[in-house]
Length: 153
Image (tube, rainbow, N blue to C red; front, side, top):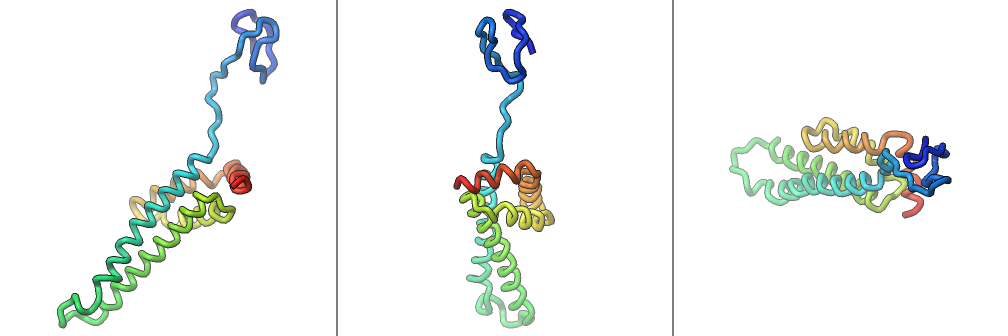
């Protein structure tokens, strides 16, 4: 690399020319870390949790025997609590991942990767969130950076 003012050869990591003092401007943008991605993922996981916990609470509250006509088959009374339970389980696991990521807990990265991989089949929001989680947290260099973030927090 050479100075564009005086032509002096510069060291690869030089910030200024040693001859004329001109400041060097890097053409490459600075490398951004995963800190912003971790925060956004935490918020998205909490929103995803709310999308599952809210209907689960509605199902638990309103879908019992008194709201159905008397000739409803008996399996229906077991079907709605099962759906509500699955929604609640999904919502609670998503909330735990979101809170863990926002608090930068050491276990939250692995939990987010597991829950994100499991949510890939939940089209469209779970798929998007799973892909984004895997993209942001899976690479090895991001693992090291997340470990450093979790030690600081």
